[in-house]
Image 1 (cartoon, helix red, strand yellow):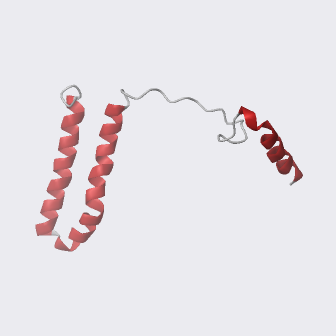
Image 2: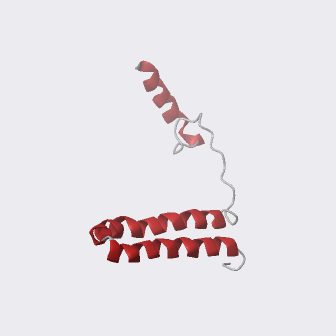
Image 3: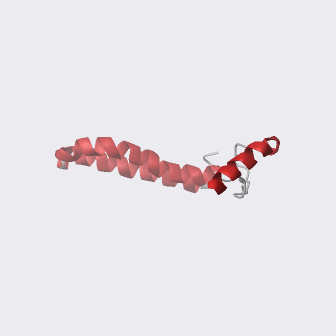
Length: 94
């Protein structure tokens, strides 16, 4: 799959190498920021990778269904009509 999506793979590797290089150089040139880069730099790599991986896996996921927002609650089904009516009557009382 990495060969099939070679531009994304190369972009992912380039981003990881760039962020890793910044982290390594910060150890020598800005040691006071090492703790900050440790806390935020490693999650930053995962965050940047998520954009590349989202673009790749979007092709393999089925399209999402549109949900109707007019329903009272997505947890209530057709058989819960009495409960829906009770909720609507409580909403109208306020």
